[in-house]
Image (cartoon, rainbow, N blue to C red; front, side, top):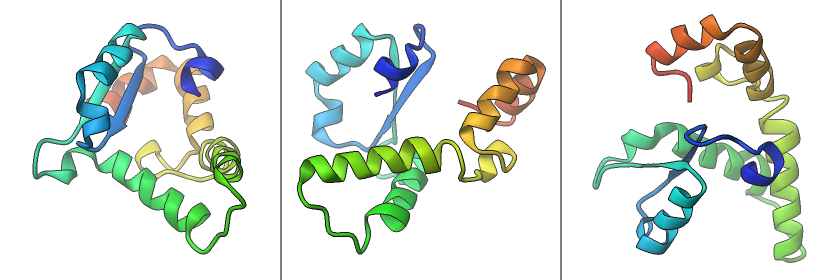
Amino acid sequence: MALAARRPGPAQLIHHSDRGVQYACAEYSALLAAHGIQPSMSRIGSPYNNTKAESFMSTLKREEVDGRAFHDVTDARRSMGTFIEEVYNRQRLHSALSYLAPADFEATVVARPERHAVNDAQGDCH
């Protein structure tokens, strides 16, 4: 979705994942590399290395998936995609982004690049 919708340049996209074999295999790693995507994966036995990705998955499950009955896989993908694009990225405030929604944070970074440098030094910016 990010490649199609946003068309990021090389090294502008980070793929956060767990250590699942599907993400660690050579074929998947090569696909990420072919698109200039930086992989991000926790060290073995340390889920805290990837806390932002883990936090996102927890939010997705808690706010969109838990307690819902989807008609089929297509319905689930549509529903989760809508949640990510319309709620998580545009409305939901994120503590790691100075309590801005990701879209608002990105607009601020584009408008004021010096803010990006400050947040990046603090480890808050991807």
